[in-house]
Image 1 (tube, rainbow over the protein chains, first blue to last red):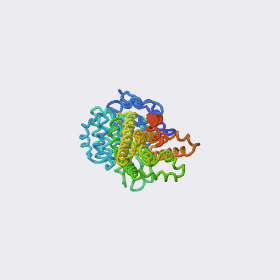
Image 2 (image 1 turned 90 degrees about the vertical axis):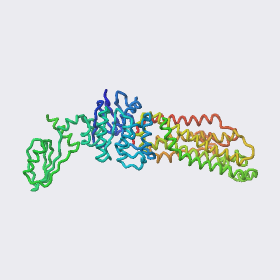
Image 3 (image 1 turned 30 degrees about the horizontal axis):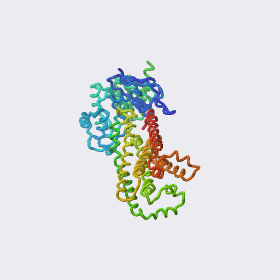
Image 4 (image 1 turned 180 degrees about the vertical axis):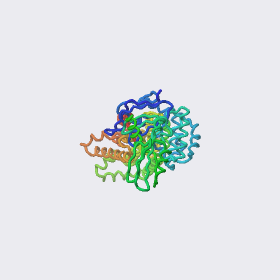
Length: 294
Length: 266
């Protein structure tokens, strides 16, 4: 059974585009990344899956259940963390989590354990929490009832790198226990670290669904070199997909062997060297250029 | 539903105590003055000096200030009715609006409860609060009657005067609840519901004063809980009860229909 399936799912807010003809399949047991720039329709998709909003046309199923008709049944087995979710300011962390648990038969067995993992003080009032700590509480409330499917909308925003790693470790562990994870983000690198497959969404439309392993093989790096004498040479090396001179510095789009590039660059006097992960858009532009040329 | 109900019952306790205490005090304090005036009958002479329109508005054309129920019906009842309606409307408007304003609605909707269950939990809490509020005022009024009133009065009519505001409050609570769906922010939903109460009161006053405006009266909940009518008839009219309960049920039903297919965006 598929964990999530959407069939030509479309949502317009009046005339404003949300998502258009989205066809998505998430297998049970996988960690699925959902990536796109802000405003691409990630949150719209997720809100439709949880039936906070109603599709304009098309439909969607979670574990074979219709998201509109069987919404209550679905939410029994789904844990959700919203990007802008608010929590009741007057409650303590424990009060909030107990309130959450009371909808699921009051099972609070995991409450202490999860609070321990994320180092959350259960006695603090919600309003006194920092953004990152609120996020942690949000993650705990999503995991509390051991859901079969976790839907996380930008869960890492506001978390420091240490907490991010804890979260990822925990998500991997949940996944090993069989939990399917649907993870939205606008940062490709974090999706790469965690997910098995990734869907790319842009301007409301699904551009493609790829396996991370396959994407990584074609991983590009942005290289910028500024030369001491202010004259950029033309480099010949396998893996240089694109090079461009710009005011005495050279800009490469590179997916070859970095060692070879460094050996080649050693012949020149170099002022500065930058190597960075390209933006999502750059990767996919080049990725699809290459696919098209083949 | 139960979880939502319990939470609402806990969260709104403080505002009930504040509003309830103020109106209990006003009721008792205002009634205590009756003891001083009771046998003098002078008040009615002063009332004769008021313009007729004013006497009509306060029901003094039919009620006498020197009688316990007349005094309660003109001096205390109007405060309970008006302030209570404002309290009820604000409370009703806040119940859903605060979830959207504080962005907790996603948290709530992510639980395995249907929207109907969420509304039912909130409406039940609303009902409990409006009821408790009226019980508090009723207790205060009964205590005041016991302490300061020695002359005869109709117990049935007094019970009518104590029960009728509950019906009006319930109607305004439901209107406020419904109104909140048209205003996603509490900032605007609350003042609007206060405005609604005052507008309806104004309609009632207009209907009392002008025969041309009489039709307006039938549109406002205040018309159905007129103090003079209750004292004269010794009870709240059965049709009046039905109209107010019907209006409340209609507003609650409309909120359910509206909310069932509503897009929740925060």
